[in-house]
Image (cartoon, rainbow, N blue to C red; front, side):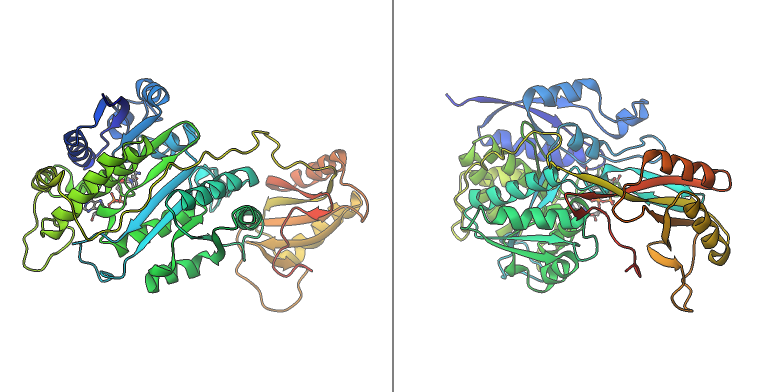
Length: 482
Ligand code: NAD
């Protein structure tokens, strides 16, 4: 007797009930025993006034079952502050988002025949998606990009283990470390360090914009790409376009305890209820889920049936097959069910194995340091004054407390002291960099006294301490700073 699996099913918004309904029907038809616990989330929940979009019963169900299959959730403007999708990923720390981009037999695209078979492993809980945003002045917005060594190590180790689990050979790490040396650079450095532990895997770093270019130009060169949250979000939508569109791109959100399976696409509200959208992306997410729970035969059976269905020209309206009319979502679903148990001979099947568990230190202070020195501070101030007047004023505040005003920048560009006559366009938030005398530390009482002086004339929004950890500078230089 095979085991009964307990799985949380979130039908989702818009096209969600149609795509998850089709998937459930096909999975059930394989004979795998699943007890589906149907739970609510998203728009309907926001409308009832619950700001998370996630009722307690849904959270409890996922917590208990550890596995969820999820339709897309809309973030209704005016009801929910935060996306319920992002909240779910963060709540269950599903830090790895695995998004395969695989050419499907019988799905015609401009890339057909090139055997695209790559996987994006997207960091899923850090980066700009921490959603920490503030207006610095009425017209200047800021978003914090948080990338930790711990988060980077976790996703990179998961990516290397994923490469091994599918018998693949190559891992690219796509970052913008050339510009964001500390944040994106943290992932690049973690990648370069951890790569040494996986000598059997070819490891390359690639700048993310070039990665996008190469994905469109020569997608065959990629096997697996690991990347930061926002890069991965964009690259995976780009990737889906290579294989027929969002209707074909599945995904898995993997954590230490919980895994949530969902398509890359959203709720596509204009197609909701029309019985014409493509359930493949959620169905293939279901296939990933079946492998995750050890139901390898059922997963293979669905893939084979799907390939046979496409190859016969039976396909929904998002892809045009010459000489064939598109079929409805329900007709497509019935055809896949009819083909269950039949073999499609032409497709290579990977030797799937479970992904090995990623074990890293659970220390909160993941990176430890012996010596920390605060050598200065960046103070972000609102002003409309010309720099020729504001700069000397800040210099005199600095002198009063034995600090040097190293420079003032606006949007990262040096605007004081002036080195040349070219004047950048300015906005009303500037950063003043004050440094303690060499070999000394900026004391808290000095910083407080400086802030008190600034506060008597200006609004300051935030301060960043300039720290040096064991002799390594922990802040970036400004454009134009020596
Ligand atoms: P979307 O992915 O919902 O749709 C964009 C377009 O892609 C559609 O108009 C359609 O042409 C095509 N498409 C998407 N899924 C398809 C399918 N299964 N079959 C055929 N064609 C398909 O993106 P959007 O319009 O930007 O977002 C709509 C809503 O979905 C928003 O509220 C957004 O926040 C949400 N969203 C949710 C998730 C998620 O739940 N993980 C992901 C992305 C967007």
